[in-house]
Image 1 (cartoon, helix red, strand yellow):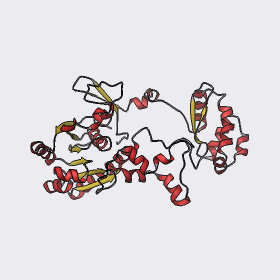
Image 2 (cartoon, rainbow, N blue to C red; image 1 turned 45 degrees about the horizontal axis):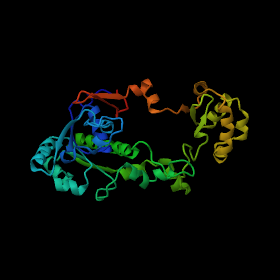
Image 3 (cartoon, helix red, strand yellow; image 1 turned 30 degrees about the vertical axis):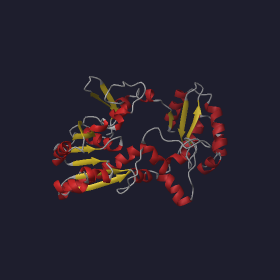
Image 4 (spheres, rainbow, N blue to C red; image 1 turned 135 degrees about the horizontal axis):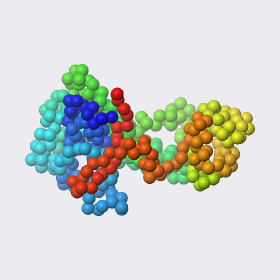
Length: 357
């Protein structure tokens, strides 16, 4: 995807911090839009500027976390409680196409940057609002709160272990995708009718909407998903992991009967097809199945085994750490760099991971 998708450049003002809202702004920046980010001058800007690893430069104004979703933006540090700064913000918004906000409703109204106020000044404005729970809730929340509230933590972790959060703020990422989709539909409607729109989503709605099969397992079968580690409640062996001869851990994702037969052929264990003839039987007898598979897999070298599985059409993977991920050419192609004011170079991965030709 080139950086000139928008031939008539869109102007976006971002009144958002942390991850979800800024990720939406960066998405449009990658597609060629002009993105202006307004940060709170009184608090030193977006709070994620200070969310640093021990290995990061403590004096730098940019943390790795902040850099992850704030590429190619013009940043203004303003105090919207100050009349002069508030006037500057309104001037920036005056000719904007889109405003992205994660201010709580009462705060936005107090500062005069809520939808009702801004849409009167600019009827064609698309106002994109991101909430934690809903438009009226004043309850603050970060991603991990929604991982807990929306059921993700309850079912994430090892069997008999405690609830575990996902290591990426995935609810923020999912909410960003929902907001992008809403904005794109609002743009289509504006091109057709000339009308602006109010687009909103919440972290909670985005999280629940992403429960997919785990939700329907409850809604249709009365099954409350339990912690199973990487395993799958409906398929086996799927998400199950095994240690190879060289100490490397591999994962299998066998989703069809044909794939299971192919796995058994690769392992030269065709008898397992008769012992575990159906997916339902394998799910019910996952423990003994995994014991049988592990005895054979531990005798194989990981890369040779993975090559054989690929040739046989059996989905499998090596479990990679972050360094190993970015040794892959496909991952390297997704890196965006940007020179900072202090001369350092920040890096992050693209939020645009599609091609449009």
